[in-house]
Structure formats: C-alpha cells, structure tokens
Length: 297
Image 1 (cartoon, helix red, strand yellow):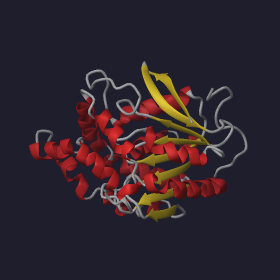
Image 2 (cartoon, one colour):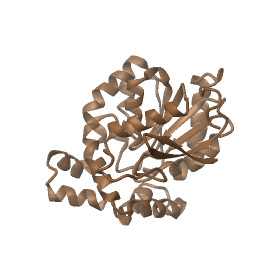
Image 3 (tube, one colour):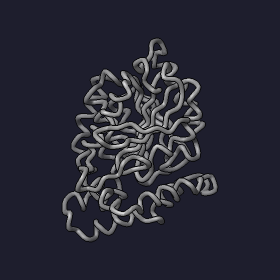
C-alpha cells in the first residue's frame, strides 16, 4: 500500500494505491462518514492481480477540507473532482467499486463517460427509490424544508459518536469483529471545526440524487455494464430492498447478500475480494494497460 496526494483544482486529494498499474484498474469510492480507509483490507486482498486507487473526497479522510464558503459540497462537484483525479492519473478504463456516497458519485461518472467503465462493483449503494426507507425520513424532510428543526436534529445526530458507532455495528454479525479504529478515526475527522457544515451541505445535496435514478437506470439498460452486487443484508441505511431492483435493469448482474451490515468489508472483505476476482476474471480483459505509461509513479 502506498499513501499519496495529487493536486486537483488546488486541492490536495489523498489516495491509497496498491498493485501494479499494468493490471486492470479498480477505482474505489467510499461512503459517509468514512474515507478510503474503508478499503484498506480489500486493497491488500486484491493487490496481486489489480491496480487499486481509493481517493478521499474533499472534506473526508486526509484530503483538503475547505470550508463551505470556499468549496461547494455537492455530489455534482465531488463527481467533477473524482473525474479530474482519474484524468490526472491518466486512467483510461476502470471498474468502479461504489459504496454509500460512492454510488451517486460513481453513477454520475459512469453515465457521463460509459466507455471508461469495465464493470460496476456495487456495495450498499442506492439507485432506486425502493432503497430509501425509514432511515431517510429526516433527509426527505430536510430536502423539502431546510428550516424543519425535527429534520435538522435528526441529521445532526448522524454526526455524533453514537451514530458513527451504530453505523459500523448495526447489522454486523458480531461487534467484536469491528475494529474500533474505524469509528474512532472517522469521528475524529467529523469533529474537525467546520466539518458539520460540510456534512449538512452534502445531506442537502443528497436530495439531488433520486431525480437522477431514471437516468442511471437507463444507463444500466443501454450499456449493460457487467455488474457485481455485494450487499450487507443487515444494513438499515441501505436495506436489501435497494439491492434487488438492480436486477430489473441488469438481469445478468450477480447479487450476493452477505450476513453483515452497512460496512460489509469490515467483516467480509475476504469474501468480497474472492467474488470480485472471480467476477472480473470472467468479464474484464487483462490485455493492455488501462493506465497510461508513467502513471502511478
């Protein structure tokens, strides 16, 4: 594993890198409230056969975290930053691993430039209205009325240490399987001065994603990207009701429901790595580099 930074629009974008750039590329897009650290084990599992890149979004992990007056925290803007990141690293084609917030960023990337996408690797990330159940009630209230105090209180609770701990442990097979460094480090970064405003702006921007669902579903039907879905079935945030609808538009997709929660890789990274390797071996050619010469150095 290597830990690097690259300049994108005057921001330092931190990323984890593993593997040989001559191998097929996997771009890994993290969720809330974490960072590329969620992929630390999976990247080691796959590094002997793939070239893995896991960036931190602005405001997350070890990337620059400008204030909301200096940077517009929207999913459109995050997508633009990640698109620039891919271009700076001269990545021509890649598979997309998307979890939670990674899904709306990744699906925007895929729909904008479908020729770059070799496969979709979806884990607890939504593209269907069916997946927005009870957890999303305060979000929907906030999208409709940004002055609704009940919704604001519900969303601000998600920035607390209790909520971060719950995200990691709810639905997991066993709490003792969850490394406490995960929720502890995530919380420390959430608690940085001004970061609450960043998160509230993105909570609001998440409301821009459901209107894109029909567009993304049309992308699935038109381009039929090879798709592997590995989903923690105990996830209350993105329950399995959001996983099954993919098969309507991608009937050849593989769906695996795992006996774990939202952060499925904490308990099942080795299982997911095995599924990814078997899937990409079938669907992604290994001939020719997907990264331009000199990239990754």
